Image: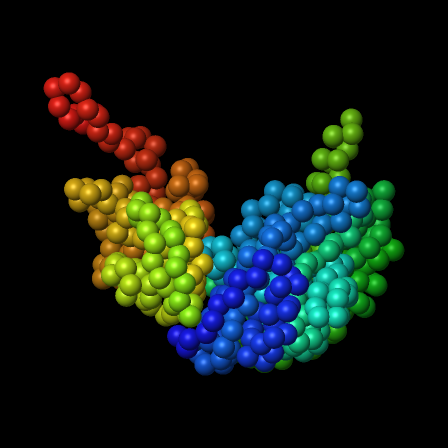
Amino acid sequence: MRPFTYLTPKTLDEAISLHQSHGERAKYIAGGTDVLVKIKEGKLAPDYLISLKHIIGQDRPFLDPETGELYVGAFCTHRSIEQSPLVQHRYPILHDAVKNIGSVQIRNVATIGGNLVNAVPSADAAIPLIALDGRANIYGPKGQRSIELGRFFLGPGQCDLEAGEILTEIVIPPLLSRTGSAYIKHGRREAMELPMLGVGVLLSLKEDMVTCAKARVCLGVAAPTPFRALQAEKHIEGKPVDEDSLTEAGQIAGRESKVRDSIRGVAWYRREMVEVLVKRMGLKALERARARNKEVLKTED
Amino acid sequence: MAKEISFVFNGNSMKMRVEDHWTLLYFIREALGHTGTKEGCGSGECGACTVIVDGEAVNSCLYLAAEIDGKTLLTIEGLAAKDGTLHPIQKAFVEKGGIQCGFCTPGMILSAKALLDKNSAADEKEIKEAIAGNLCRCTGYIQIIESIKAARDQGEEQPRVVAFRTEEGDRGE
């Protein structure tokens, strides 16, 4: 591999000042499963790699007990999120997405922040985090800022990060009561493959456990960036959720998709699968919301 | 740039100088001279270079050697006993025909070991998940999965042989 100097700052400020002193000759690296491949392929040729792996904290998901917000540090490995009981239990949509990324070997090393900043249309981790209304916290030479994760992606391979800025964490607001969520990565193989399509649905129900209080329908690889099918969400919200309404929402989401032909699948097939999978994930989210509600009622008894 | 790192390699504490841009795979094969770890694709797709770092399976082709500073590294050479007695997983691969050309085998066995060390009762689904990142182009996986199951079952029934010393001399149990 082409030689470079590997720097291991212990704080964000130190990392940013290193980036400022080396400018375009420097590149941030976390898990390295994408950066090192790009260096080997000659697509990147940095003289300095600034590791974010040694920055203290932000390496596992944690729930703020006061605000109920979930903090997912950008330097969390996919494996630490996959194995987090908190994520498995309360944020199944996120667990669904991270458990099928790459292989165990990749998930042990690759970070969720790395998955997001690569901004590929197929970023599995982005879909559930957008469905959960996540915000991206970004730290850089000009200080801290925070944006909706849904607005973070600008195009294939492009995200809203300026030179020297670091995505530090994703903050997920408290879940509404009676919420269920699910994600499916659709492809030919379960492992070691980018999805042909990624579909995430989140549903929050009213006290009657039938009417939808809030819906999120998020799609990956159905447009140049991950996006929310807003018309489909609107169609579900405020009405009783059932198979029929979810079928219609799927058809609407299919029309909202800007799918195209690629080596992993053709546009017409992708559109049809959006219809099918939005409905299927909607039903799964509904089932999970009801199961979770039963659990909550049981603990209150 | 070069830096000195300390780590435990197959049970031995070591101190070595590494270049910043060396991958762990290069370091193991070229600097440590242990060639049991294989390079397949070099891009994290095939798992032939799998090693265990602090108990977790990783692709050594996408891991910088400098990053094992302070960590524990296990390669395939660290599995068999000093007298050549194979580790139960290695034995199971031999007995169940989990090996043909052998190129994927070190990685396959280390992925299996990382799984069984954490989950000694892993079911077929968990075994498949653990080796999803290890490609084999000969056996077709069935024998490999059977081998891992056999190693798992053996682990349950017969604890590893423990040698002990008595007044009359060394004895095996």
